[in-house]
Length: 309
Image 1: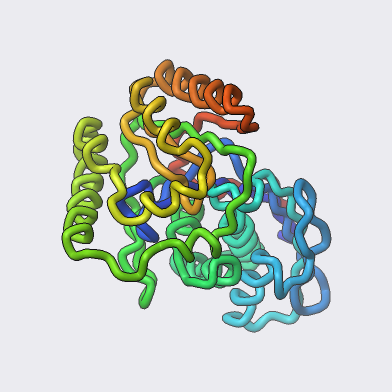
Image 2: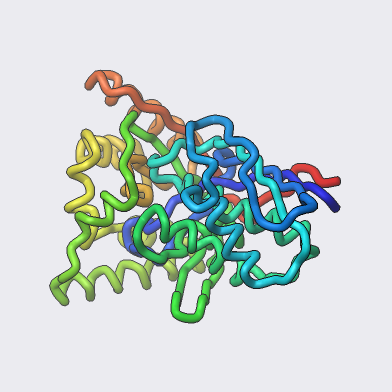
């Protein structure tokens, strides 16, 4: 196999109660990435479509992740990368992670899979570190593994794939602003009162239980952020009003998707999901704020191979 094209999906992270721990793979938003072998060693980014991003392999997350992979294998050829960005950078649904994870996944396939999923997560994290100034795997893990994931440890990468209730779906709405992950992380407090840590731990634990039990009432009580949302919501226009609107429409839960500005809602009824989406978009229109949104089932498979030759 000399070339491969993959669809690398978007993701939402934190899910309110699991900051830098929880992630969820989306189904219908993502990047298309083509990787081809080339005779000379090293990596080049041949083209980027969709959004204007640098092709410098030391400043583009795809190039950074690819180089990290190549440090761990001895080969006498290299790779060229073509990226069609379907996810807007700074949108809060894993734009950088899609490029990082999709690239290392594709290269691994061309190498006949010498690396396992945890290796690929580790390589992808180098790209995440570049854009956010910190190592985190909550976006790349669900993209590579699919479904809903929990990052137990970063010291020695350990990720748990959690069950996905069959009716669960996500409504994503993004107001037309960009928030850099690095900027959003700066507002997160470093010192947290122990009472809030205890409550957040309880929320995370009960959310995991709700997935195994398919208990949506418990999920609604659990997907609550008492640590990060209070500060980050100030960066997102109309957040409190959007949250109230979504819950009144029947959402199980509402929160900030990753670093924002996208807002996610959870639902187990497609009619309710459409009502939520329409109501939020209408509210933003009334406020003269451009926005767009979509509904997604949970993608249990992660990255998808589109073609290879």
